[in-house]
Length: 113
Length: 109
Image (cartoon, rainbow over all chains, first blue to last red; front, side, top):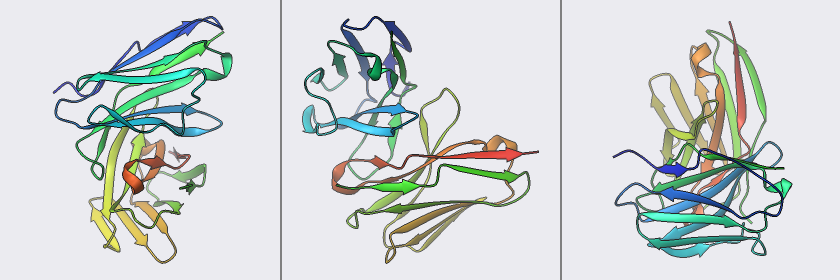
């Protein structure tokens, strides 16, 4: 398996634009997590799915962020409109079940100018 | 809510032992984890400990768990320059992985 695949690796966008981050989890993993990493806040859990259903999105600013998992092999995190404070590295991770290892993608470095 | 805390920075000399500490609040976790992040990369699982264990040893790594104090530590013996990275402890309570802020380990030659 190629591991968790995220795209794009880097994204630079202007404030107010829509940004879509993509993730392909490892096949057979029922759990998918979206994290955001910044110097100030560290690694924050934004949202996670189990079998494509949102289990907890309490860490996600819902006025501008939305996360979807239309099928077992694809998830998106959308920011609309984007703001400079959204600049961060966004990681997607997947796991087989709730208590086992989470495998991380390489991350998407988002810069909003 | 659930919280995981770590010190932010540790500097050691090559060959010394490193000890990275972590405290957590959720006592229902089945496992506790240590992840390593190298520059420009995602996190990778380094080791983990089952919550009914006190200690786990894996080559140069020793994990100690004190459930009463909700304290987890990672000891790296004979620290090498290649061990320089950010180390995260993580708690898998309530079905989601919650990470500490990460401890940056700097290894001086």
